[in-house]
Image (cartoon, rainbow, N blue to C red; front, side, top):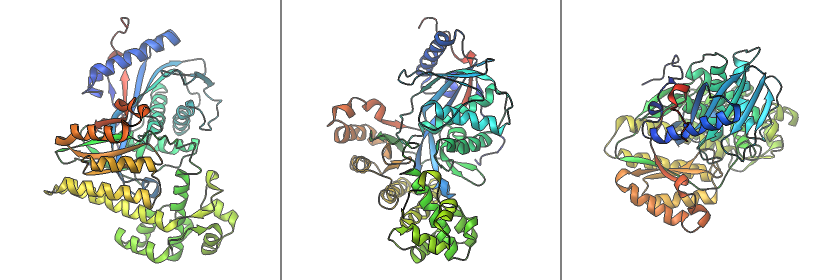
Length: 477
């Protein structure tokens, strides 16, 4: 189905609707959150919000370039329990005791991305400003999350989305799924990351049983049914990559390289380059195919890294203008830009996403082999052209492929985190055993967390508001 712009986040009174395959575990978890909440604040939560993490099947680092992606939600999520207050304060506590309690006024706070609660404040600030809430209500809050952190499964974006949803509901606001996803995409920039919207869109728009082809400008989506006979397996390399802390040396640098590549291509092709921010805009303005854009990349951009001086000369601007037009606060220091490699990855990855969707829709006899091949090409491009992999991820991908995966690739921003592999259902048990032996068993620290690091998953549901009535009495806990 094509996504409608008028769908709202559901309000559920039954945990089994939200967690149909793990209702008992979810009930136990929510009871523990409720008990903790009562011990901290002396009252029960009025409502709960949940926002899932996601795994991107294919389409890496192209959402912020204007191209569609193909993720699915996972069942692991961020949960926020909320009781509104009237003392003008936000009080944040976490079920994980290593995250300290935080208290701040509803109108007096700072965000710099250094502390866990800044992700909550991102979503809070975005909703308050978007809805123009003059006097936001205070909130007592407990946060819980089981999305692996810094693993490329969108734990931070899920937190921002959950915060935005909780803030909206507590203050009586109402936004469609698409509207709130767009707000949460923009407000994550308060902590310095320049994402394109995939994580937030998937967290709100996801649905059971289907992946989503999500496109941007305007935000829209289509359900994609994966062919029968395969399952997706997530494997964590256990190399952590904090996107906000490394934005100025990793993630945001790639954003800037893509933006600069788009502007150099536009200038060379006679387009008003100052109106261009994304590689997709160049294709749109030239009205050509992705194949043709790949030809233009090889024709216009040289393989060697560009210097700042060279880019200034091409665009006919000063270094100060380069900072203003192309760079960002966190990337002012960048002196070398691999424009051809980055643009080639983006255009070829955008093409692979469309091919993946087309195979899922046509379902030829060799569909799963074709899909696996596209995933493998995606990882190779991420590793060699976009350079967002790492030795451990490349090793893990190699292990997954040799263990029987039809396709395996990094997922998420990269530089650590997880792989996603498409595995024949009949081989799942053997696959898990082989990957455990080859990657995890040789290191006792890795083996100790195997249950949270290697698991099969299927497309989960999107964000939800859960009523207090859905949580059974926890007095016996």
